[in-house]
Length: 205
Image (cartoon, rainbow, N blue to C red; front, side, top):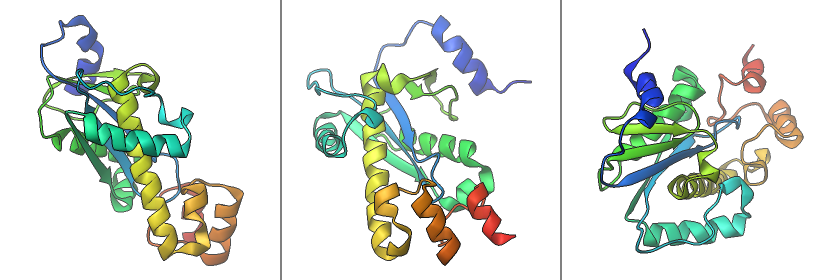
């Protein structure tokens, strides 16, 4: 039997949208070999539009930083949450991502009537939700959420780079680049490496 939340994803497009606030949700950090997965939820203010919102991957780092500040200043409310490396390793990356998204929505100061989530899976929520593939390029609130999540995680990488500079987190953001893989072979894993991810798991055999 399929769970209620997946049925909800299929049926939400058939329902009349309820009146009220709409939140956009997106994540950053599913693919890297280290660090938490971060999710953000944003409810934009129609009276204070933000120009230039787009999929965070299409924006320069400096432009993301500018928009991050503008989103925080102009949105009705926003929330950033994460799932830890321990949760990623114990749950798997998909379930940890959905958990981070759930926490981001629950952290909003205002409760939305509907939540729009980037992708094709939905977290457990107590409000109407819809999954939108490539929503970060289609829905302004999801674009805003993608920017908050990306900048927050990039800042985490920069801070962690100062703790473990030998891995180069500030440059590769935890992704499995040649530089990162070479550092893993030379130094082994640090506490923030995801032991359930193949390149890191191989070090513990």
